[in-house]
Image (cartoon, rainbow, N blue to C red; front, side, top):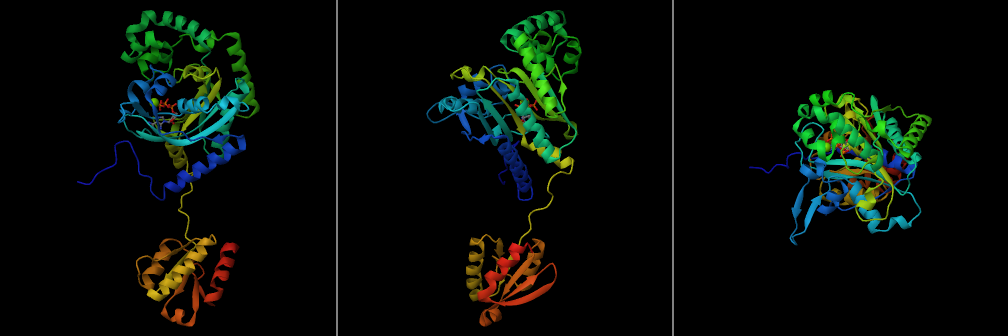
Length: 423
Ligand code: ATP
Ligand code: MG
């Protein structure tokens, strides 16, 4: 039996890859405009990095990691997200010694052992940014505005941007107490996951998707109710700046996000049209994370965006380039001698930056012309035994149905002229 790809992974074939490239190029352009630089880190890391950097109580660490022992008996994990890796790289490469803040972005594969379904894969891709070394609300606003402007550039509509503040450890302790008090008499109505969360991480009960948990938490104290003065001011400043930048958002006091290390700002972007997996971007501030993984105390904020989900949303909204790029020219050489000369000519054209293909199956003129048509080629450069003899080449414009004959020595110049003119 033929071997199949692992469950939850994808083959991205020509035709689809162009759409990925389009999205990646748009992302890179916007990042450049905002002054963010790319970082690439290893695909796997010591398991402990994620245990400490993502948090032991999270779904990611508890159930979703691809963890294995290498041949030296070290526990390694395929990265399930990038924030922990970027922070590790920041510390390990002493980026805190450079002018702050350090503004980074990444695009890459992530791995999570999840139940595959529409919009949920085991190997998926994220674009994300991390800003390290700056704690003001203006940084949070810049990061959210980058997301907003990227979506505008892509023509994505129907976005819902939710923002919240989960406070600092001081406000969180107060909130935890009030929330537990509120839930104490209602514990039995919670789902089993949330009953477990009650002691360990009651905050997360607020964003449980289970209807009975949502019913129980109606009227429960939110993190916004218990913000300290510093966190409150930070959140007010963020809202003012988002309005100044024209970002349309909604305050969602139930938004707490999955990761343990978030402080203050948390945000998420949703697009309803792509079904149940509607979150296309999530992020927040993590002022304690760098210290948690052994670095100097360093504030940070970032987000991660699901590439597959953004593409799905763009697809539904007909915002993706539909066509494969067309071929400029196909060189049709007939016979071995013509193939040799044609091969040299093709190689010269390519080295001058002109995309030309050549038949690789020694097919007849008729089937080569058909192939040129199928690939949407504008020109066929025809070179048979007779043309070879007379040292000429036929240049056929497949769109206009016209054909000229040029001496072989002028072919390169003539083709160059047509290419530069854009026909
Ligand atoms: P979800 O609630 O959908 O599981 P999450 O909170 O686990 O999302 P994050 O860890 O914040 O997601 O990742 C950021 C983004 O990455 C998500 O908003 C989503 O767009 C995308 N994403 C997360 N997990 C997957 C997956 N398994 N397959 C495809 N995209 C994913
Ligand atoms: Mg998840």
